[in-house]
Structure formats: C-alpha cells, structure tokens
Image 1 (cartoon, helix red, strand yellow):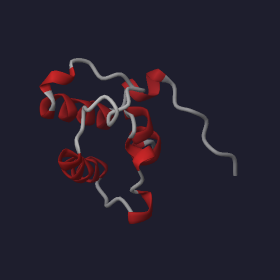
Image 2 (tube, helix red, strand yellow):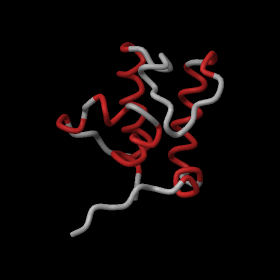
Image 3 (cartoon, helix red, strand yellow):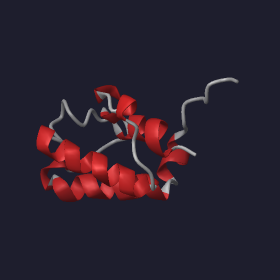
Image 4 (cartoon, one colour):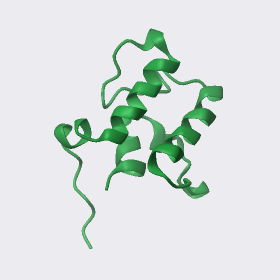
Length: 90
C-alpha cells in the first residue's frame, strides 16, 4: 500500500472539519489574525500548553473518535496541515 500524497490546498479548504478547527483556533486566540495551513501553531504562540489539552479534546469531538495516545506527538499538531493529515483526512 502506498502512502497518501500530500493533500492539496483545495482538499484542505473544502474540509468542513478543518473549517471548524480553524474557527476554534481563531476564537480561542483572537490575536492570531490569520492562520495559514502551514503556520506553526506552537512556535507562533497560537496555542499554549493549557489550550493544547482543550484543542486535543476539540479535535476528538470534530473527528468523532478518540485520538490514540501514541498519536499525541507535537509534530502532529504543529500546523493545520499536520492536523488534517494526521487526524481529519478521509
């Protein structure tokens, strides 16, 4: 089985789940302005360590199932693109 290719911008933009995740981020951090698909959410301080727990729970709610413990790695949450690829991509 071949790994999936990187998602296109259009694929990510058309995802209802990603729209919800992006809206949540902008609601929690109103100072964030715009968040691109490849913006580093941690380095840019869009999420802090306390918000990360709530963010993880919200992603579980959006995807409709729990995130397995072994999938909880910083790189999986680094950007909206990483979140889509790791948790929300069909």
